[in-house]
Image (cartoon, rainbow, N blue to C red; front, side, top):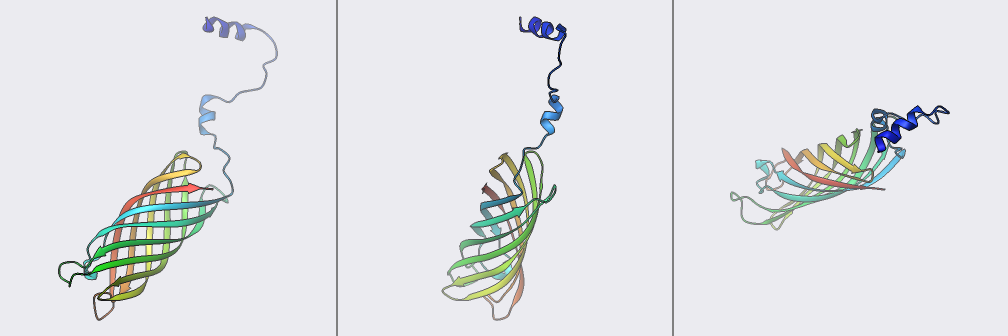
Length: 191
């Protein structure tokens, strides 16, 4: 019945009315996105600490506050955040609980597509290693990569990878260069 009604509407002469977009054009159109975005990003990562630090690998949690703007197709921005791990000395060292904290500030770029966003960031700040036997504060640089799924313009979730490089004297008498690698999940709520 509806098929015959559609044919009848096409056969009636008259004003064509407003031109509607094709299905392909409707799928390609971007939703209006604000020029500036503020986001709160929480992440959980499993970190492989450099063996020279002589601490066990462990899981950590963190939170970044992201500020971004979109002058064209790519988003630029900066972030401020904090991350922490609770682990222990490895079996080659005397037993002790180790608290690792990271105070972070970074700059990044995002490449948004319809439902997926790719991000690259450079972060720097201070690592704080502390145990009952030793402690040290060290600068670090970190390279971050993300792949996020965007089911809603206010929410993004996905995978995060971190490559962190620091120079520390924790558990040693001299300063050494260390490389820590992390992989995990993140979720960002945007305002």
